[in-house]
Amino acid sequence: MIVIEQLGKTFLTARGTSHTAIENVRLEVPDGQFVSILGPSGCGKSTLLYIVGGFEQATQGQVIVDGKPIAGPGPDRGPVFQEYALFPWKTVLSNVAYGLRQQGMAKKPAEEKARGWLEKVNLGKYADFYPKELSGGMRQRAAIARTLAYEPRILLMDEPFGALDAHTRLTLQSELLSLWEQLGNTVLFVTHGVEEAVYLSDRVVVMGGTPGTVKQIVDIDLPRPRVRADLLRNPVYQDLIIQLEDSLVAERV
Image (cartoon, rainbow, N blue to C red; front, side, top):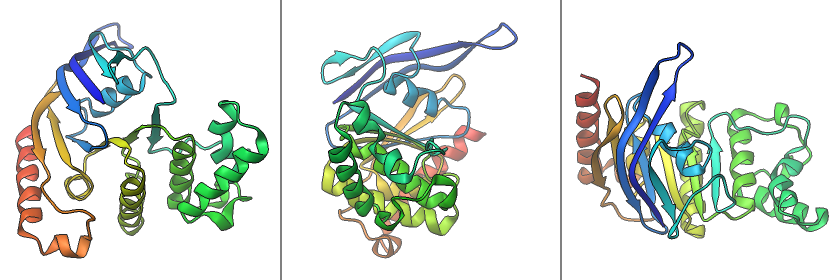
């Protein structure tokens, strides 16, 4: 599904100097796999995600999706950001229907499909609310529904739960897993949370260094569907967390 070949990105800073964010990143993500990109701040996790999404252009290497090099954003790759990015002047229903309308779907079927997705993310009663009237967790549910409504094959998620309180974050992690198990999307999920990465993923890609590169790829050999209470008693789960924590500590030193 996704092949990342010797990817690099160099920025020109405001001071006129160059800064290399990532260098020689190589990764393959099979169709339907949930892959988390884990690493300390500043290691280029989000830069990598934005290049895969087509929002940034690489200065070295390429990203190939379904055998074709990407040339920009596309409906096959659906982004979900930490900041929600909802239109404040539109209702929740209109926000979720927006991508469908942009693709040419008529208003009535777009809104019907949007209502269906709002039900799936437990926001059916809030279709006529505005984003400012929702909690942070509800806004992120709406943002996820908006992206999933136009059925991208790849989800690109940049710390989508990072701004939420601990309880809401755990709830949305479980809801995301439930949706993913039904849909089978390929997911690239950027996070700095070790437990989040282990709970969600099939594989965890550890990035580090300056410029950032892939340091380690860890297979998460845990059964699905995943129940957090069961995992907390699973020694394999605990060992994976310790292993990845040690990898992050080594990157910070």
